[in-house]
Length: 118
Length: 212
Image 1 (tube, rainbow over the protein chains, first blue to last red):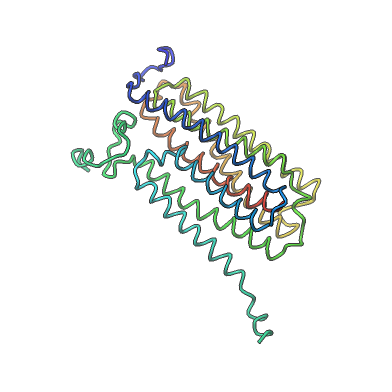
Image 2 (cartoon, helix red, strand yellow; image 1 turned 90 degrees about the horizontal axis):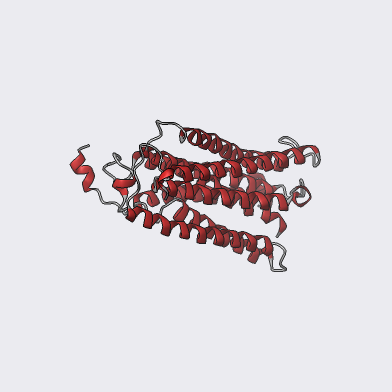
């Protein structure tokens, strides 16, 4: 880092921090390459002649990988305290449960239709 | 909270004291960061209900409209790449702040604002095209209602993120900009990455799913 890039009030970061952040820089580049590649795969996947269910499951898996890569690396959960992971996973579990409940709630036939069948 | 107690709290980050001076807490995590993660966890539930509402009504009324005739997958894919690149730049801005390289952080923030604005611009163009060329409005069908509410809410989140980052971009030129503000950039970054992960879910489950 050049001296001119240090704004007044800012002291130069310690060599240990600089080394750590440089490592993270290369990690971030790796992650973005993987994310871009997965997005290409998603786009190619929809035109491939596979069964719909297989494509649907593949889309779920690929988007889950992208999701996890962003929160783990870009959002620093890998380097932060586990409490933050717990906090976010708690929200995700509640959100996932809500989605699951809503989808299954609307899968049930209306009461009138049920009565007609009986 | 006593300082002695605070310093006993373990942290996974060996550079915590250097990166976040004066942010010793009982948990070992700056309070602003905990608050942002708690907000993001609650926002997950918000978007979870919006996404499931869209999927449910899409399943209950499958023949109302054919989204394949409406969507432009090329534009949406480009928007996805734009948002991914903005996320990389945001991570690099936070890293630059940790290195105390304000000039680099400023350039990265400018890049995030640029890519974010491109994304919002593409979404505005998409909505305009859908309304005027495809006659899909908020009230024309249940598909239009759930689609616009979901993607519009995400767009509003992106817009708020851009406004927030513009504020910090301007602040970096100020003499009152201090090393302590690295945490604020980090918190804004968390929000920005969150809008990216929401799009990571919306892209396949609202757009790509229509093509399989």
